[in-house]
Image (tube, rainbow, N blue to C red; front, side):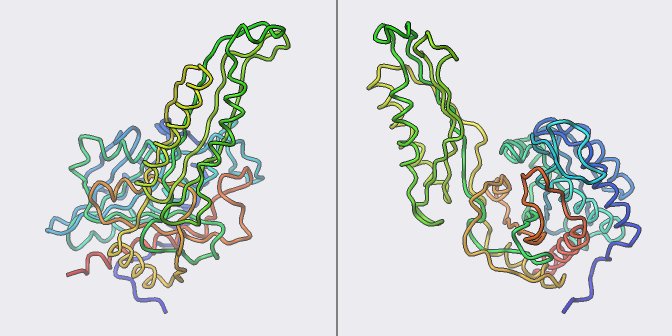
Length: 392
């Protein structure tokens, strides 16, 4: 049963305009760190909602819109993402990407549109106490955005007591949402490995130092660093995503090899142990084969963990919105940088809003955000805000 809303519902005109905006945003995707035009479009849509303050270029191209009651109370942040993916879209929608090799194939265009819908609600009914911050975050896909937002010198001005987010989930029943306490997204990081010896003529390989045996040993050894345990304490996974060696030549024994791999755990302390194990393996293998070793990390994501109180508030918002809750018993194996807001001191929680199992999966070339979720997401967030402000 749906409760009578404390905040007004979006109008039919709102939903038509928001849907049109989402589809237009979909046509012009920008990758992580490049979201300048996307941020400008968001600011243009925010202007008629009369936020009390707008911070731009937060942690890069991030935008924070602040709606202040003028009365003491909590700061409640709702987060969406601005960036798209480096994938060629293959869908047939009229609003498909116009940029070759780039597309909104994760739904960030839809998530940001939901926040813009919430902005319209707040323009008609300010919170009764405290502040609401709508955080349009850059660079989620590479894990750099939330870190940069929290590190921005202006972040203390918007630092939230509560932080909420959602992500569409095609594997979840349409219109329902999956939510749970504790880890909801794994920690992960990419490692780039370079082994260097020296080249030689292919007829005299002993004259050089080839990394061939080392790279052949390392790939299965890296995989063996995975625990094979179910998602939970002690779970580790290593995925080799790329390997290359030498030049494309029959006359030259190779002198260099490269490996890329992704390390994954449920908990951050398990990631520290996995990193130490992998680095030890690399050093031992390189030393045994008299090769020099270099490695670096990219796309570093901390674990995202739902706070118990914040999860309860989000669950209340779902109930008030008439959205069925499905318990999330294990975290998603994928990663998400929303956890940084919790690490910065907020009580944070995110849910997974179902697009339905018949919908294309995120990050696939055929994916497109399901526009029918826009009013559902707006209602969840407005009711979550109401539940938050009603707390004693």
